[in-house]
Amino acid sequence: MDLPPPPDAPKPRLPCARRLLAWLSGLGLATALLVVLGMLTWLATLEQIDSGLQHTLRKYFDWRAVYLIPEIGGKSVPLPLPGGYWVCALLVVNLTLGGLLRWRRDWQRVGVWISHLGIIFLLVAGGVAHHFSQRGHMRIAEGASSDTAEDYFEHVVEVAEIQKGQADIIQVIGGQYLTDLTGSATRCIELAAMPFKLELSGWMRNAEPTPVGAKAAPAGVTASDGYCLVPKPDKTEAEANTPGCVARIVHGDGADPETILLSSAAQEPYTLRHGGRVFTIVLRKRLWLMPFTVRLDKFTAEFHPGTMKPSKFVSAITRIENGREAKAVIQMNEPMRYANLTFYQASYDQLGRGASAKMATVLEVVSNPADKWPQYSLYVVAFGLLVHFITKFVGFIQARSRHHPHV
Image 1 (cartoon, rainbow, N blue to C red):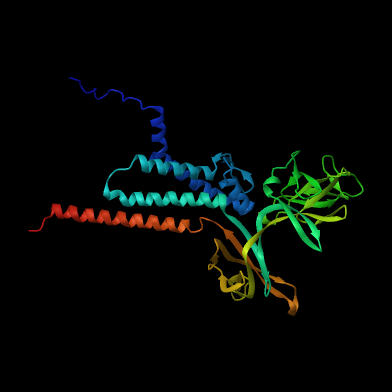
Image 2 (image 1 turned 90 degrees about the horizontal axis):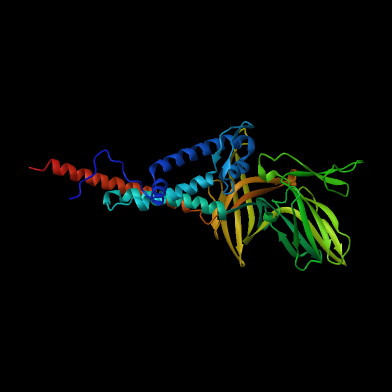
């Protein structure tokens, strides 16, 4: 007959895999992750005052930010913290494993598990939005139309052949091929149907074309036509940055290469003539083609009395698609959702002065496949809590009935 182990006998050690699963699904890890996430949110809120929203989001919550050092008031805080993206990813793993490994067939806990799934859904929605959403803006004057939005942050190099006074063939070099060209990095871009290729280098996130003057350009700085690119501090609002880079044009016919400077601050594109053909090269924010045209019929701006603080912006627009027209109104907190796009009333502008001045609306355009997911996840969490409340209430009534039966 086997005897039970004495009370003070050491417990057998679990295998490493089971211990790892227990740690990943444990309540202690979930608590620690929530505390760290709260710290990251608090520190990011403080840092964005000096660094701007986009820079702070990229530093704290981008998937490429594995760890970070906070800065408050321009001073580094010696507290290395994990990136918020990976904290949320580990929290999803924790909640998923915790739900699978700790599941009990207990109808009284059904509401808790429903809410549990709602929180996981909310975190997944944030990840989908992070990787697949796009944001830009569309500026339209009254009576004018537009079918393109301009990306807030991504800059691209556009190479176009001009025929009959307009761009006929346009090739775009995306921002992912530019932003890593810092220091001595160089990338050669082959352009189909173009009699030349581009060698790009010297990317600067915020720069200004500056005359070299009588003296030669500083060592290590490329000059062209008497100008060089001088780096500037990043703007607090990242969309106001004017990046620049160096482009070397390598002709396919063996002619001498040309070196030019590309800057988003330039007023006109660089014009290149090659064998009777005309090309333009420009660095600009990426243009985003809409599946329909938006015409601004009327814009109305209202302000609080005696101030320039807006109380209401209203854009009455016409959506034109395949020859059909549809009226819509976009105003603050009341966006237009159509064709997987959301149009928000962001700001306004005035074109010209005096009696001939026209009002223009600035619409923020967002493409986010998870646009409604946070809302749905909150519905799931609320439903789970309601189910949990009802089951607990029913259990309470049944328990009282058993202890105090009717006579």
